[in-house]
Length: 496
Ligand SMILES: *Cc1c(COP(=O)(O)O)cnc(C)c1O
Image (cartoon, rainbow, N blue to C red; front, side, top):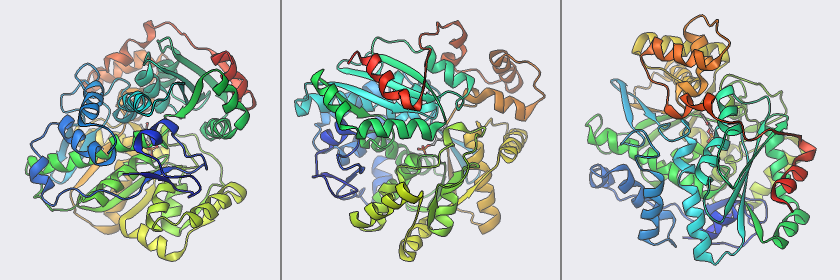
């Protein structure tokens, strides 16, 4: 399998090269030249497999230049009992008949980003060896909170790599911030940016695009790469858990092989839901993919109207990892539904850059609406959803997952569709404990960690140990910079 750029102006590469480069030289995203199909009887054939074995089958369909041994080693380093606190890795929890929550947050940083970012460093270092890459790989990340910590945890002390993370100073939760500022490791650098996530992300994109800086790094035997969800090496491990959810449903006889399911995904950069869509193209029977947004509802409007318009005010919400106005991974969906029409993609992306918006043709809009349904949810609704879901099911939702549940309820009201549903749960409620606690009871304590304990007592749940230990950890990263200073900050980190 080869990977081409969605913009069509770079030559096709192998998966190892796509993973090392992160983004294509023409600014496009790497996309597989075809979507592999699962065997017709995959549900029977694979339902007895462990999560790791399922991952091996799926990764080998995409990473065709890796050996089985290389894939297995990466899987075993990523998904093991030291890193994940649940043997099933991505357990599917039955809430009631037809309603399932897939918990994607049992990794070391308590958010679903671990599912991919525990794997990516191993795919990347293996790729470096295979392609004869001699430079040190510098991973540059803009984060809305969860990616940064998950990338730091994944790349920490991985030989041949360094990792630099920029996060919006006022756009992350207290726990998220502490997770990053206390990060240990010899190859890790963290800076707060004065701005929001889109500012940080635009800054990082400018750095990637800047030739001078790339040359400067080359002189020091370094090479930039990306761990943002534009990197193909992040997307492919995400496809695994959607296939796995389906296999679990069949294995536990909640559905019969071939039955359709709906999947609801709390969405920001469109990476996670894109992986679900790839799973459906591979043959997982999916009726609807439900795209749930918070007040930053640019995707809701896009799916409903065909116009993507980022010209709107940016809202800071209680689901900060979805506070995004430019969903980069949408480009991969557009590439696929236009039958790989790079010319269209270039046109739309230029419009997005110049006018902040673009409109797709009606026929493409129909293709999207055939598979996707979208709505959004305000913070007050998110809060009510956390409380009512707790009251009704004694199951605690984090704010991102609550957005998904709320939008799913809107979908039910609108359609009456009774198809069994899997809701992707993207974070532990303790990662956003303050917001969750405020939804449940009157909060008086200012100390977030005391509050987490209160929340644990209230719900008889336990705080994930990595979060519980945060207050005792030394603060190791205190750099703050403006968006204009990001390059200089990076240079001083790397001593170039
Ligand atoms: C990143 C993130 C999301 C959004 O996922 P995308 O792949 O960017 O759409 C949702 N919830 C949580 C908790 C996240 O960390």
